[in-house]
Amino acid sequence: DDASPMIMEPLSFVREFVAPARPLLIRNAAPNEWQIQAQPNQLAASLKGAKVQVDIAGGGLADAVVRAPGPDATFVFAQPFVTHMTFEQFHAELNEVALKMKQNNGIAEDTPVPYIQHQDNNLQQDFSQLLDAIPLDGPSWARKAFGEPPEARNFWAGCSASVTSAHRDHYNNVYAVLRGTKTFHLLPPTDAYFVPRKPFPNARWAMEQDGTCVPKLTNDHDVLWIQPDDERRAMEETDDGDECGGKFVTVDVNAGDILYLPPQWLHRVTQRGPSPDDDLCVAVNWWWAGSTTVDMRSAVQNALEGLREL
Image (cartoon, rainbow, N blue to C red; front, side, top):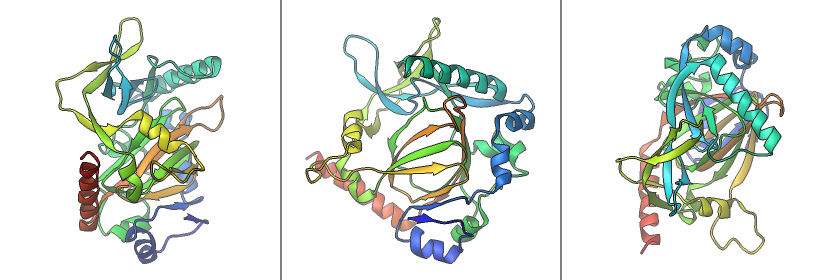
């Protein structure tokens, strides 16, 4: 559902969207003072040279299934290489990536792409200087609706080279875009069965001496994730009655918009800045724990995935 500018009434929000697990897009709901904090010059001034955590991934594919180099070209689940730098350094590297994309009409798979996406309360840990304008615990209607503080508060900054592969979370997600546009490709939990997860060897992106970025296997356990071919097939539109299940619904969340995404909805996310010459996209989000009903839905989905393999 797409709502016009409004102050969301908490009880209506719970009754009409949280309880039935329906996404909601609220246009122009993020106040201007939040968006002002997301401008590059303002971010640099607010952070005053403090270092923040930045994730690096080849071709912008962090926490995604990619092909490992070598004769076998095995699929692996690649986690990001983690480093720290000032926001000015991050923004400069992001601009270099954006320039390469513009010149080459794309990005090479081994090109390091920086992305601020640390999903462990980094708004509070690395970007607390912004909390004078951006509320720590999210919009007031969301706080009242869920009746408790969020479990995590996250800050996101990246360019169009970074893509978040299809996955599902166990949280109520209130997501505010402050600069640029995020495009969410959504699939309801009822259709997630048709895009099955499979185990992949765990890997991590590593920086090479020649400046490239390659995935290298770790000793960690395998990760259940969606095969890229299955994700691609579900993204394609067909007119033949949907042989492989439901198709993703696409939603553009623009600067100033807030998206509510219920638990267990599959989502794939791309992003872009305000223009090709200004490719910085910035967002914040808040995660609230799901309910017992959500846990039951998750159990049913996991059981269906197991049945599919029989």
